Length: 211
Image (cartoon, rainbow, N blue to C red; front, top):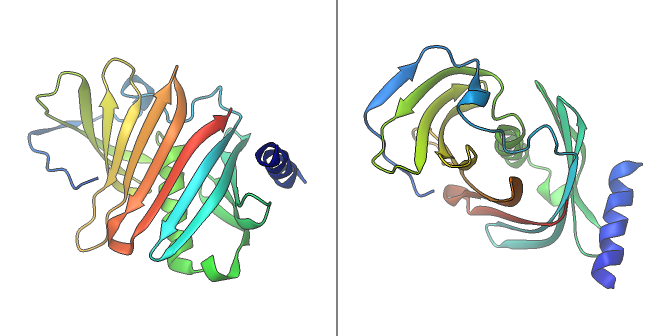
């Protein structure tokens, strides 16, 4: 009963890899029709989702719920609060704009917020701002791998061939800590998200409990 009360409270608040090595790349010269290459993590039918969440950063361990709401076709808002409704952060992601509505003082660090912006933005806008796509050869018949250069940086996308869904995203950066994102689906709905950055000991684990 306590959990469901907290869930309702959260909804009210919102509304007032291991490093992979790839070889054998073939450039795709027209990356505009990305929907033909993969399906977005959150498709056009997505409106909102409540995820049971744990967040570890160095020695700090946080638990609670992340509520994601699609504000418009070009905007998403996420709220992370604990079980009694205390907010950790309230962030909005628009194409070309990042808005911090609230951030708990101990988490209000430019480097952390920049990382959250980059990681969630690639989930919400995986098809946007792409400048170059290279197909990476793989011996696995059930997956396709693309190397992406976009406004959000350079990434590897691993796509499930049977479903067309992205199940792995990894940032490509030299001399900078790497982000690893793993995704799970059920009946085409994103049910699990894990974001990790081993270099700064960040791990965010999200499991859908209410679409």
